[in-house]
Image (cartoon, rainbow over all chains, first blue to last red; front, side, top):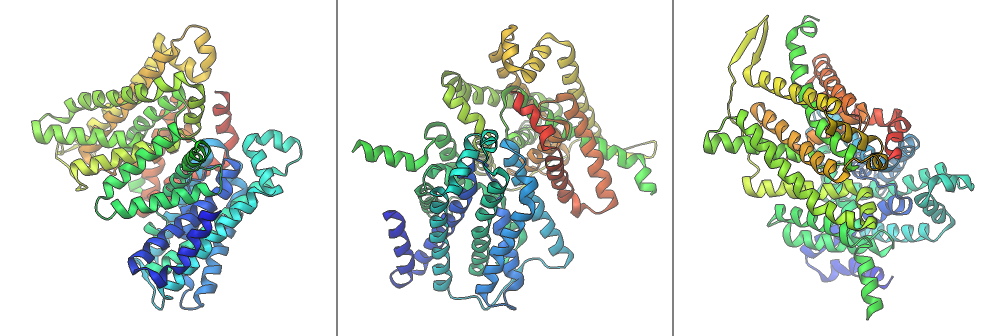
Length: 295
Length: 295
């Protein structure tokens, strides 16, 4: 709680005290927190691991690039979030019928399918990447992103501590049993799926405004999906602070290594992921809890 | 229409179909007996391809001999994964459960490590070599020697494996493990030995496929992932753990892909593959899922 608050305050204040570089780092950290928290609304609560959240990010970016210029950017972002949620609502029913590892690869496949369809559309339109102009200032974008991170964290917290969250937890523990005792399994899963899609849509839009360049292969990059999962798992999926810890940790690691040694960064990412799955199932959050109790 | 009915197109379909069947065979064997979704499978293809490249460029060893070297190398990797991971899992049932649930993410970690180690060691420059690339014309069909060799090797390994599973006592044991793991143990199948040999065999087959691919395509550290996807498509169409149907599905995918592209344009290849992938998972989730539940 205190950690989250401190981070949020720091995020809002950073344009006044920090360098442009610092602002870039904070933007990234806030972005990954927002994404990982949104992911956890579905995947940490129900156990349906989504490996396709890049699709919502990409849809958000695409909608945003099509609309900026005609609409003020706030409305474009709203539309981006709405479209991502709408897409989740449309595909949710059939997709959520599929369980276990099949759900994981299905979400991945769906994300890649949409990516290739958008790439095809764009090349049929003769566009190879779109530039946008008149983007809001970096400070404004940063505040929006920090706002989304806070919103996602509060959302994830609210879901976990509600009847809705209890229903989702029942699905994770035993879906058939939950259905038998009257939990509206299908509706809850669909709602969680939509909830976890909306903020990533807005994040995609914001990230696009920041780079002011849209290229479908990048906007729907599956590495985004994988990074979200890695951050959430390493941070720990059992608590709301888990995704925050994971996002902060990896964003800092990426600042240290990515620009100079991208391959090494990816290797460290892989090793960390394997190490945490095998030896630290509760993630950084669980580790901190244990240290806290021992002290 | 003439092009569609020509033997030329059929030959192309068979070449890629046999390769898909071969790559999927390894993945299916490993999934069937170990219940692990090896998302790093395509990276073994990459390792096989690099083996062939370095053998011919450094030591002038032709790919036909590299087939055995790559197979041995990948089998060794399989042994390492088994010894590193499964010895531990056998000791701790709780760990085993976690690994099975997260196998996809775990192997993603391995995949990232392999790709980036390759990128560090060999750079990201794409490489290639020439081998048996003279054109032979037979009955109006033009083919290169390397494609013919690829078809021959891939088809014989696939059908050899099927015959082995059908007629050899060890093959029976392997099929028993795929169908009912516990029951197989009860009637005296040495589960440990079957799993170890299957993972070595499955990995070796991927290495062989890599050597075949390297004769006709560019070699890069990141070439493996598309093969992973193709292999997933194939075994989902054929049914996870169903070896024979998987081989058939591999050839079918080759046909569908080649003719699909001939009817439209190469730009639609990815959409076709991912469309099939998502479509099959969505339409028959129960049918596909029943097999996994039985484990």
